[in-house]
Length: 227
Image 1: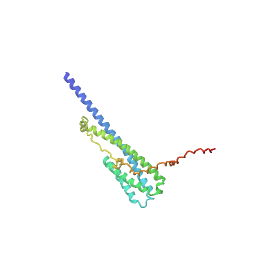
Image 2: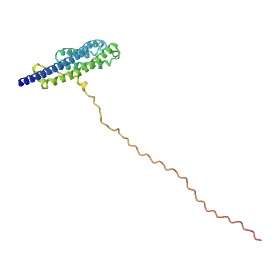
Image 3: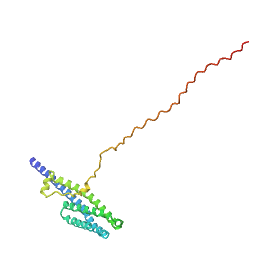
Image 4: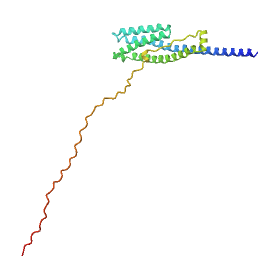
């Protein structure tokens, strides 16, 4: 009887452990899905803003049609990459980011375009969206790292294999965004200019020594006349 009870206790403990591991994997997977949905919302927002930006600037940029075409094509590729997974989506979005940088660099050459209120508003909205994408990407990648670590760790990896919990892909940002600016930390001392030693100050002139006067002979008293 005692042996049966021990076996039952062991089975119950194992069942509870498997149940807790399974629920933990489900929560982590749902967190990854939720984090990705936040990225997806911001990406769609950016995709919607770009046609308006192109339409606003193309009237000014008669000789920059190639730049506008590349932006339009990059946007189409980014939209199509949405069904190919986070890795392909990240690659397409990074290419789109690079074309937008080229477009903004060209806008700087057109003073009237820079002062256009509609263009300014669209640029601000795109900048805000980019910042939101950056924050959402960080949260998503942290969630993916935690989830992938769980499905590779024992005993959760057993449950992951049984219930088809597979690893998720990271959403990598543009390499230019991760590049650390190079700073020259060489403490080079400024060249020291050697100064010529200053000429010694002239010694103060001593007043001329008084010339020795010849000794004055003592005056003899006048001789007394003899009687």
